[in-house]
Length: 93
Image 1 (cartoon, rainbow, N blue to C red):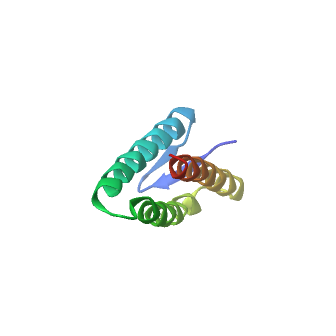
Image 2 (tube, rainbow, N blue to C red; image 1 turned 90 degrees about the horizontal axis):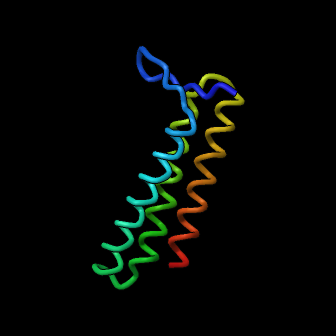
């Protein structure tokens, strides 16, 4: 399946490397925010969960511009999968 998202004048081809890099960046950013919130707020984990779900919801807007319905569905599923793993994994921490 060709996962292509228009980016201005060019097209962004989403491959395994880009997916892995985005997942790692999101995971590490979430981990860092959770560490800060746990130190700064009494209910840091709850605040983090709300923020993480909000960012996941916002990230679902990106794939909507993909070329083709199959690409949109695939990219949405990848966003949801990464979000579910990061949010549930960090919540258990």
